[in-house]
Length: 293
Image (cartoon, rainbow, N blue to C red; front, side, top):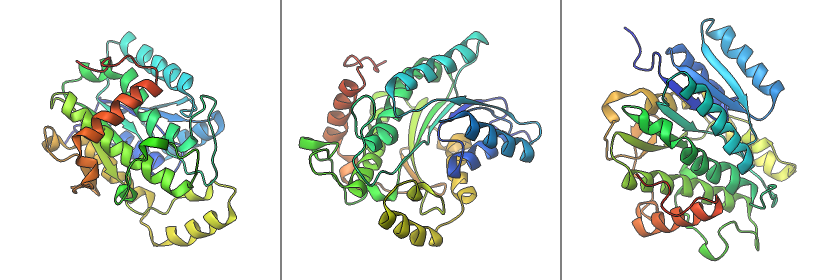
């Protein structure tokens, strides 16, 4: 039986390793037209070769972009837009999966804290830029990789990027909370034929926590990740959210391993979601209300 994703257009960021690579591979296996995104040519080529070795007829291409920079996010969106619109196509699914962990305070070229820029602002901005293509799809979906670390976390409004008193783990938790808040607020602002989901990948045995120069942080993550599931297993949750017809119009926004799960009470706060949305528009240089229908 033909997959519901056969011939559908899917964009996925952070697709050169870990969950993103496995999800891109599974999406290609299901017949989707995959536009995958990575940071550099060498890693993109290696990922492409891996996927092609698994799925010989995979319809996939890699685009290069450093989503830590807003100019790069906009350039990426323009490239995607040109590819799809010129062929009279739409975007059925956007998977905001790129993520990073920084133990030390690191600023992007735009002056934002690195985790805030990559894990949260990039999904917010890329979704905004690709909105016309998503709205053209009969049932467009925006899936953003969050984390169970959003529980027991609140946004520090007076220093939302924690630049005055930085804590890498707390900064990471805030970004993952912001991803859930974004998904919730998105669904308040758009009809159910254009829907956002936040995916909890669970504890996964990947190397995200090893990409830091902090020996202590690397040691802790190396021990912790051993109890995690494989990236292949975790990726199935993303693919489920991209492909399952029955969840369109679902009231459930936060999902873990293909099952709905209640997010934190703080993530359900509508006033918090609205306030974060407005701050995010300013940070991304988006005119207030520009993302409205």
